[in-house]
Image (cartoon, rainbow, N blue to C red):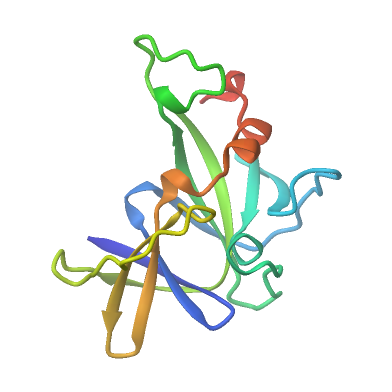
Length: 165
């Protein structure tokens, strides 16, 4: 499985590439005043307003640094029937949205073998997006589970049902 590697400060993280739409340079964002802290802002991507989540702020509580290699990872984020803000799950398909994930040092990909991971013995309820760990010659890489990246409050705020694409 192909993984996209990025950093939050000096810690390595990875995301499966199967739902990555594009990786774009960090652009000027429209600030959402009074919105949740982890939302870096909005930008226009091919005539769509795309919300951008600051992964550094989400994971470690500090904003992404303005590095040359900081990028916005555009992903297909799906709200599944049972996660619908209205609770309506009768025969409807998952709603797909483009979501931006801002991170530092987004420069590499690697192939993860199915046997190249271990699941840590603990689960953090306040960070359900933290998935399995992968080890390599440089240490450990934390995988992110995209389906759990947005807490419910932010998901309802950013992706109301009528905005589906």
